[in-house]
Length: 88
Image 1 (tube, helix red, strand yellow):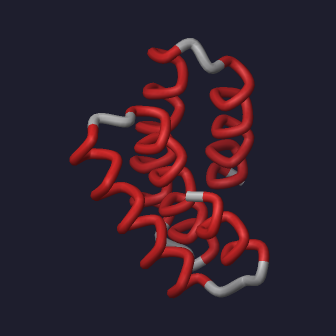
Image 2 (cartoon, rainbow, N blue to C red; image 1 turned 60 degrees about the vertical axis):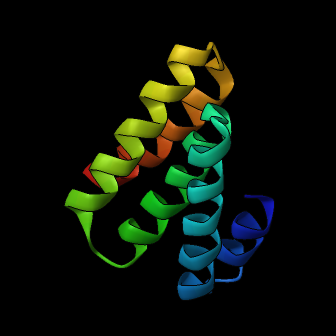
């Protein structure tokens, strides 16, 4: 997931999406809900940057819900900021 974050910072959206999809698949396999939230955040960010606002809203909304359910207040807030950017 961290590598996906670095790739998005470099504006390499195809690489970010590929890495985040892999992280999401691994998170689902091992049941790591925080990794799932973070990978979906990166996928949602890529969708936003590419103009796919409906997909971004879904992925980011799921990230917020997961982070809240896990009690990660800071991550929830961070994901909400990105979700707010979609609305702008």
